[in-house]
Length: 287
Image (tube, rainbow, N blue to C red; front, side, top):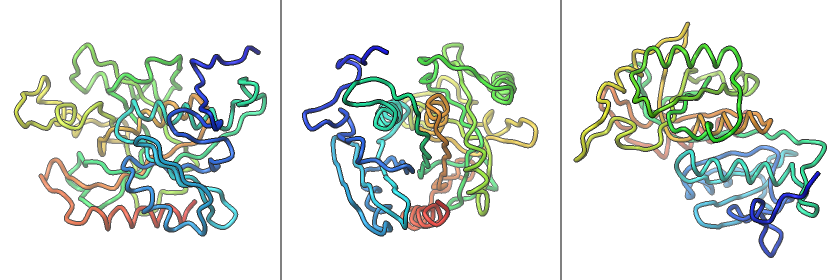
């Protein structure tokens, strides 16, 4: 096996991976991802103890313990492009030997739990409720840069999505399922359904400030979509990338979204911090 060149696997002077500035021993087996760097300490304050902190660019990591479980909380920033960095680098920390620069024979599978915010696309899913994503459908194109194959459920979902949703020909959606085991763990007190991941917050999610939309009907199409007993419940900017890269790398992933906006009702949460804190505490209790 040939070593990975230094231009591809970038390790800094202290032996840490480039963007995250983490060494292999500084990451846990369970990874909680949050978009907002300031949300990291809102999670880690509930750890029994913290043994490592790192801060590089928008990527803040706190690694510590709850009982006998080693857990890391990592801020990803916003969007699928940052998920590409975070997932590749965390996987490298556990599945590439930094001394030889070669892939390890024995692979380690991690648990990734996204704690984030999202907008609801269904009237009955009100602000301050929680959505657990069964599938992530990406309209951002990230996964198309990697060799991947869909299972039968994903193929069927994609076919229905392309049939029911009016998209520009330049947008090629992809779909990946979340971890069935983790979905079962977090099933109580959540709404389970499909999440659409967008490459932006304004136009891609149908928001109009000063620019017109290329597809004004997109949000209505997403709300009306159905596939068996599943509907599209929300959209945000990371889930499909997390599910897609996680599956390709052999990790278990779930995305949990606090609904802070109901786009159909035109409502926004009056206490986002309290809703996020409730989701954090519920998540840590079930890990």
